[in-house]
Amino acid sequence: MRMKEKIFTVLALILILSACSIQKEAAEDKGNITAIETEESDKYQEKEIIMDSVEHYSVNYFRFLENIRIDKTDDGMSLFIEFIPEVGSFPVKEEIYQSVVFHALQVNSFFEEINEFRYVVLWDDRTKQKAMELVISGDEVSNLSNVYYGWFGAQNAGLETTLKNAFSDIVETEESRSWRELPNNSVSVSEEEQVPIATLDMGEDNNVPEKEILEVVGFCQEADTLYYNALYGMCPYDFSKYLVGNIKDYKTKALGMEIKQRRDAMLENATVTSAYETLESYPIDETYYFIRMAVVRIFSFGGEESSIVEFIVSKSDGKLLVADWYDARIDSIDTVFIEEGINPQLPIKWEDEEWFDQLIKKIENVQIKD
Image 1 (cartoon, helix red, strand yellow):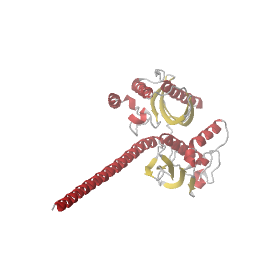
Image 2 (tube, helix red, strand yellow):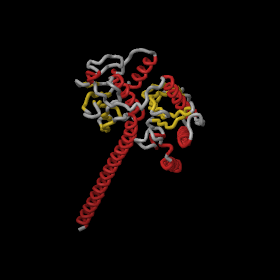
Image 3 (cartoon, rainbow, N blue to C red):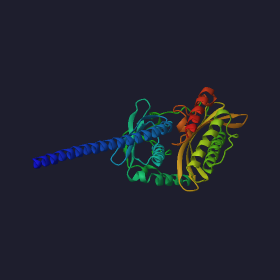
Image 4 (tube, rainbow, N blue to C red):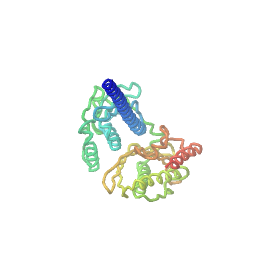
């Protein structure tokens, strides 16, 4: 009888241990599933954050953006973009290459997870047919900075150069083969047969002396350079010479926020040397000018960053003032707080007191949370 009791006890213990083991395994499985779900959730959130930032930047960068998405790959992420380039009477491939490479460089400098870029160039804002596909992947992504700044230096030295070698692959169509390679090349079809891709509104009166336009462009470059030297030197900036009213209050507050972020992160001071390329410059009417520039900022501690800046400048009694100013740097205060679709344009948004009050409240809410 005792032996039977012992056997029964052993069997009971085995059953209890088995049950505990099953529960433990179930708990471990549940834990593993939870960990996997958490990891997947984190990856999804990371992709969403990157997508939001890149989309916001790209909408401002490509005026005629048609489609954008980010796909997961085995090695990272792939950015796909469809756009219609901004051209006048005829398309120039080299100008399209420059626009695409500059965009890819900017995105990759902030989001290294994106290691493949596919740009589909569409022809004609009416039919939107595919004219060209430009791919940057693999080693070409790694070498993007060297290739771009090598090209940039050669351009400044007056040398004839191209960004065509920045791409892993260029797929052309019959349409794109008829386009000019360089601005001074002749086209293979008559200009009368060319259809503008996306003709820009250059204002009502373009008979403005070049000297006057250059004065406005130089004024904008000076304002931008002083802003960034104040930011990286972490010192105040007197906007009085350049701005008045609400935009002056906003830019002062934006600069203060960016300086605080740098101080909190204990980043190094620097001086900034800026190289500008004017993309658009024209009078909107008798009072206002529109200026759009690509800028490369080179820091004294090493490294660079790229951006697109847009200005509307007013001229009254011979005095220039910035009426609107948008910095499309991918992490700028402007891209965070100013909604898409209200970049520099008339009427001047800073004169709208209700809109300005809402903007300041958004900024102050963020500052309170900090």
